[in-house]
Length: 448
Image 1: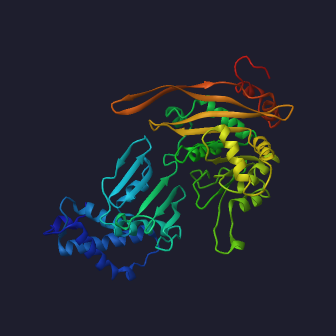
Image 2: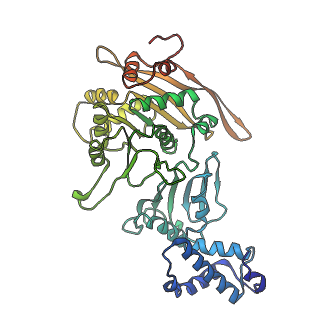
Image 3: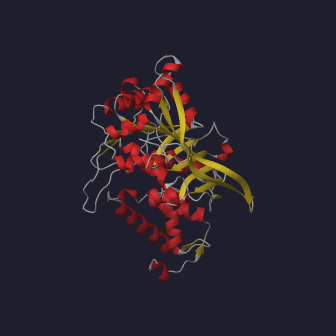
């Protein structure tokens, strides 16, 4: 509790916007005296000035204590208004702004509810989102009404302003917080995203050199799942990540003494108006191949980098990536489409290339009841005559969909359909997988 508030009781009650405007005007003349370059010290200086002004003028806002008023003023002036507490909450995974007076919060448990507060005006909403985008050097204005940026390594922002959106709405935006809870193996099991056997299978396959693609729609949990898979790689193996625009992965492990335990290189693309200075995922992938990687992670295949990714996977590198598709089978056709952005090749030839490059595909989906499931894991078997056989290894079988208290409930169970093919068994053994662990990957009754 601020001690000054005990001795100088507030006597002038005003609405919050009026107090905010007064304090902003007062502090604008004090910024030159804020000498500290340390964020925490500067914060304390700003709060001290605010406290002094409020007590000197005995200002009060109905419904707020002195400390609550200070916190709210600081959030409005220096941080990101009421969004601040959602942006850094471990329980929030997405903030969707449909207009200045319509903000919805998506929680990790599946709830989607209106925010406790709304922006005061369309201009207020625009100001806060511009402040967020400023952190990544992006500018939202009439000439650039659609902008993508980031606030931190795991917070992505897509904003739409006037004239793309209605001026009286102020702004529309989607702010995604990637894996706010740093989900572990036990969390995926408890949330029924997958079984322990499925997770161990995927982890072993990646560890012993099988390239794979995680596919699904936006918000299905692809990046979160891939982040966990990469975290299971032994510390002596070098991981090289490539991401588009902003970094979501944070795989570096540091002990209590500050020593880095694992072996990770994180890279991101850089856009430039000069094409010669542009660094896209394809170029990063090209240089990654000369950086002695054991595992290469391409955050998302969405353009010509798909061709380079499949080439890398077919030439002995372990590659894990994501893309948007509606099923495991559709993933390969999506890859073919992306590859044609680089080279005009026969579709059948490209299909043969991508199926050889990525023998494993896992399809994840956010269901109607807001649960996230690995719906299917498939292996592409290359038969002796060169034809391809996409066989299901695991799947989530939906048994029933019912409604309880106005909410949808989907019932189902995971099934192990097939074990891996002899060809994949051979590759894993050659890559060092112990024989007893290989046995666990086979369906009961199958032989090595």
